[in-house]
Length: 251
Image 1 (cartoon, helix red, strand yellow):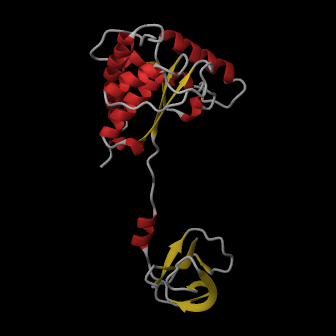
Image 2: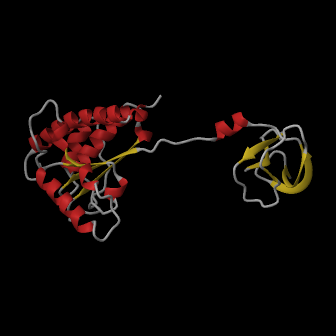
């Protein structure tokens, strides 16, 4: 059943458009509108102030229906749901913040930032609320990559909110899956959410390492090595996501 209602453009010109539903019970409902006949709308909308379209009052008017299919189709807009990626390490102050920064930088350079949701977390909450390790921030900055994340632990909602969860090493992956198994009995989580959890290095093409090593107790070279691995993995990760989700490529 269609509802015919009036709309007012910014120039003060009124049109009648067809709507599926309307909250105003005073509108006349017609299962098959007749574009040649006039109809009476007891509560049609007119401007109090023609320069302010949002200011309206109700007055009795007669209008002739105008088929506005083009206006209706223009008003219909379906937004693309961002693809969400969560990077996870132990404390969320070295590897996963760096992965978040590297991947964000790649996405921004491609002009795809509005198509992605990117975050990082840790399997423990020891550093919760802290900035990333200053050594990692400095190493990343030398490569033109900004790390701005604040440490937080992984939560049950992450298994709902994110499409992909990347663990930095095998122990991280085990801890993430164990957390999922604990939480799924107490929270409403997707049964197949464990399939979202993958190893970061599984996307590497230039390096043979299977894990991103924790650089926390090492020297400067450890942080550089982490960034080398992450840049390799993130480039491949982005291409993989875009290949499987062509709608994210943008115009």
